[in-house]
Image (cartoon, rainbow, N blue to C red; front, side):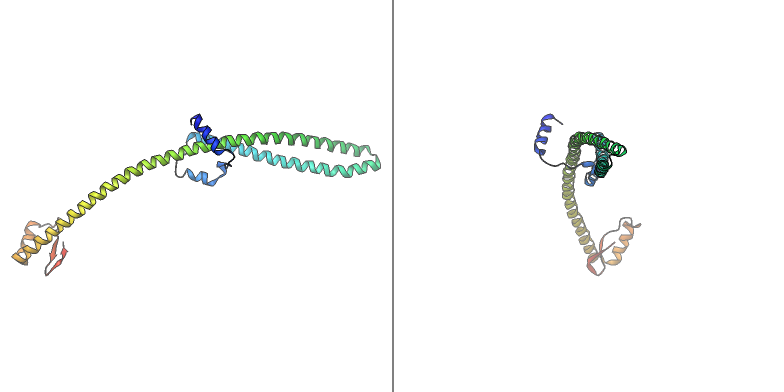
Length: 220
């Protein structure tokens, strides 16, 4: 994809939300209609890995926040007990929980930074995947359009030939009808039957002719 095209697309998509394609069932359905290129497969795998990592970090963040809240909730009553008793053991427990809260804060900050980086990576890869997807779909659309035009032209030609042949068919049937009708009237059914046997003994090509006594229908 040319750089200037990328810039045009980026400008057009600025401020617009792009769905995470690998999580969209309709995106997967696209490839029941067109082939998934190696570039699309690679980008889809990369995007899936990033999304999986993002989900893992978010789960870890929730667990860390839960642990931090637990430590904070425990410190308040421990602080009250320490003020009343002056127990060194309780002070140690408070110190330990304070240390764990500090670790939680460090981990949360680290996870937040990673989530921001992942968000940018996910968008970039998702954007590239969208471009490759559009390229593949439009290539199929153009190929189908070319074939549709060719088939439409073929159908039009066949329709013309079909119309001509239908006219020829009707003309030949009318000729047969008239010939057999006149022959039947002139020579009579017995003579006609003898000539039927002579000229078409095996009935490989039955002659379409009117029924005896009814010139409006054919028999074979």
